[in-house]
Image 1 (cartoon, one colour):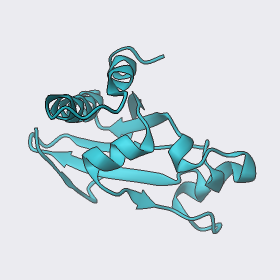
Image 2 (cartoon, rainbow, N blue to C red):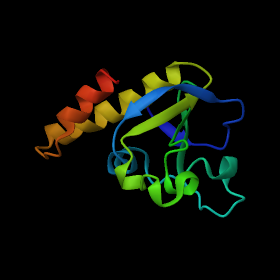
Image 3 (cartoon, helix red, strand yellow):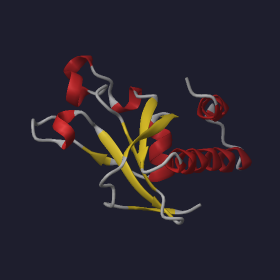
Image 4 (cartoon, helix red, strand yellow):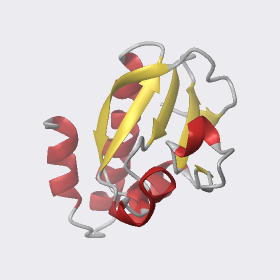
Length: 130
């Protein structure tokens, strides 16, 4: 299913989680909105990066870290490249399904082209999150 980036995210909230690394998400969804720890950033520095997506069927999804990055935790926080568990927001659980489907489809395309990135582990994590 295709998607576009959107600003229509008012009223979305946590629907589930996605186990993936930052590089994978950038490959699938492009560069995220990045926030800086300046005291005025998004949600009082609770988020470091966020993808805002609208799927063809109208489903809105956001992918973001929450309170685990350097913006919120300072030097003890995770760098974007270290984050493995992402929040998925939306207006329904369909947001999680759409996001996971895009990541899995990307992994299949990678496999079909013969590229190896250890994505079977990620596919397993997507199917069976903690």
